[in-house]
Amino acid sequence: MARSVAAHRRAVQELLSGLAHKEGTEELPLMGALGRLLAADVLAPLSLPPFANSQMDGFAVRSADLPPHPGSDAGAELTVVDPVPAGAAPARLLPGTAAPIMTGAMMPEGADAVVPIEQAVPDAFPAPGTAATVRLPTTEPGTFVRDAGSDISAGTVALRAGTALGPGPLGLLAALGITSVEVRKPVHVLLVTTGDEVVEPGTTLPEGKIYDSNGTLLEAAMRQAGLRVTRTGISGDDPAQLLQLLRSRSETIDLIVSTGGVSKGAYEVVRQAMDGQPIEFVSVAMQPGGPQGIGTFDGLPFLGFPGNPVSCLVSFEMFLRTALADVVGSPAPRPSLRARLAEPLTSPAGKHQVRRGTLLPGGTVRLEGGPGSHLIHALANSNALVQVPEAVTELDAGAEVEVWML
Image (cartoon, rainbow, N blue to C red):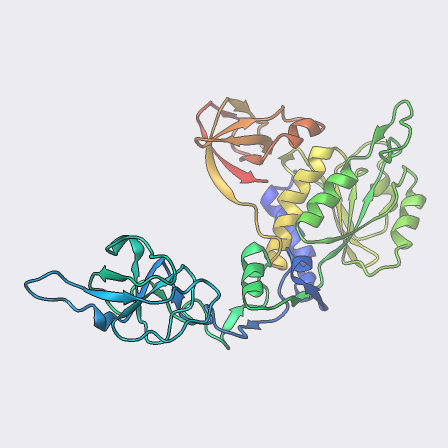
């Protein structure tokens, strides 16, 4: 009986559970840490903003100089003093004066509010160095002022250990003046493509052969997910050759992933090579990606993905990526949303079907190609995986489906 998608996902999570305690860190420059996990809490070395600054282009004022006047117009006429551009250290603001100030500029000592230029009369800055006055309305203390430390205070936790370092966290570190960060060492995958029929891109293509796309496809997916990848050469359908490739590794490996050789054909090299290893070859109720291998090879976690290109990528997304997200905390799960089919589809009974699609403006998803596991052109033109549960065999155009954004 075929194993459900949920059951196989749990099995992969259990297989990789030891990676939750993976040790080792390294110091990297910020851009080198993109996609990695923070190894330790980071405390803010300074406050953000480091000084009170203006939220608007306008006039820095003492709010006490602009009191309400019952029975008459509120506000007052103030003398305009030297402007405060961003990046300048301004002079103290004296009573009865207003300083033209730009967005982000440091508030002068004595000033406690900003009046937007649009509320001034006249509503334009005078030329620097010219004597001028401006009439401004009553304003409350703190108006349009960003207080020092209003974002984060010095000494507080800026980022927690385990944070995935995307653009936002890296931008925060840069704003704090930090140039490098301690990150966890990534999961290290040994990736091997199998099959007599595949040859390396860039070589002559003999009759009956195809170029290996799986290695590039999976390595790209893994690297994008923050994994470290070492690829072996292509292994033919000789079990001894495959064993030699796997055992000749000189680096510390956390996980082995193979593609091809896991079905029930006559030349299933992975099945043959793994004889005697605690590895199970199962059929998962999923299309594409039904044949799967799972277990340990010489004590290392091992996953055997099918050989068709779409099958191996779907296997990565459905099982390995989701398991790593749960066990290690990275990569983040794919964004999931609901969309409506632009066209009808059919799905085999008892199988969870994963179709390729393009999410369109307006919330509809167009299917790309058919369900075939070899349709790499359709995959390349997709931005989403359409999830069709195993209990569903037909869906009409307009039906709502779950899609994972790629």
